[in-house]
Image 1 (cartoon, helix red, strand yellow):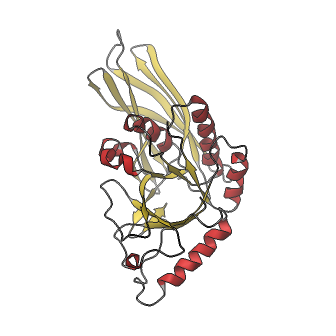
Image 2: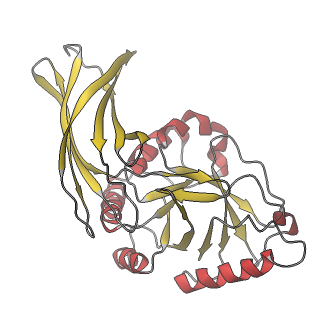
Image 3: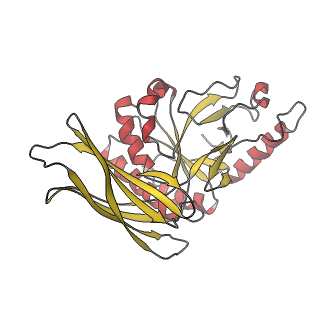
Length: 322
């Protein structure tokens, strides 16, 4: 799902289907589908029923790329406070036979960057994140709802094989579906040993969840980032950097720097603000919302000390836990 031009009164929504061309498949293909909703766990509005129409299609070798298009008037956008979701049902048709079908929920999320801050649906969004146990932990469900109550972003590490484990995929997919429904932002960290070939599959699964705000790309994959950056949609890419070194230049395609701190304050050169948003992460503090607030206060004091950065600059977020 790709969110195109989007405003308060109209949103263009595109759906891209990519699949192999099968023997005997009659061309051209057509789409037969619709969007319904929105629904939310904490709000209600008048439902709509909007058709999905064929927008374009092309054949590249033995692969078919088919794009559908739908226009939503007065769209409802997803935020943690009001997690609006739409239901999408669509069939891909070849002549009179069905090639494929999809039934899933989607969220329209307007997320981006303005100056040194993250902006969500027209408002500044400050990340306050805590680390989460691995997805196979029995405490994971409870942590989801605790984080929601505290308005906290959770940081989740993917396993080294990404989504190759069906059991872990199913479990994580179920959790992301619930975080979409209850409204909770997530930071996903890709494992450094992840093979580049599985990244498009990982990103296509993550980008369909409006709760996944940021995906952290490890150093091992930065060299091939351009090969899969077109899959990210409005999801942001981040790189982790050391707070003991001067601010680095971010590679093309990386939106945010996450500064790992071993002490409470970064190296002095960080008082000269870099050109990109920066999120500070103290791994020595406990994984609690209260620790986030303490960490923010410490960095606020550091900012206002002698020869501090300009008053117009501030951190884009604060993470705690290891």
